[in-house]
Image (cartoon, one colour):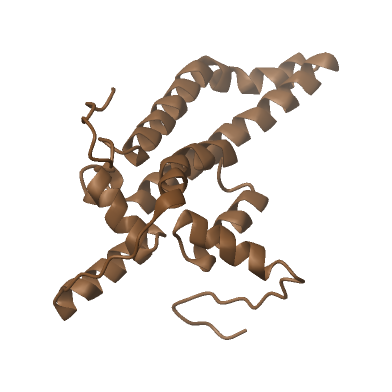
Length: 192
């Protein structure tokens, strides 16, 4: 495989292409974005429940879509395409997110990929803690107290580590949630 700025893989979908394309259209994202998310879930790099919760508002809005044509300068169109690609969204979903006031899309709180990367890294650390706790339990069952004492520092900070992860997860999910309703009805303030 040759190296390039993009990592390309060709996959025989074995009859799944129609379902894949339909899913991408329903979520208003590229087919590649759906495939990348599936691979990330399979590799354990993302929390699937957090991902579903973050995508729910966009998927619900996709049920009644209309086509819109807008005029932009070439530079604006390139910037829109680049920002949408960086966010892992289609241009339409990206614009809808901007209109809905999704903080991670409007630049108010970092970027969507950065937030998801931070959450993924924190989840990986939590996974390491889980493995360490299982190993500690195994040592204690075998009465290997001296080896178990190696985990004392980890246990002392466990509560803080879990709370930090939950704060990060809450923050990333809040930044993915629209700040206001995207309908013409009355706007509700964002809840903390």
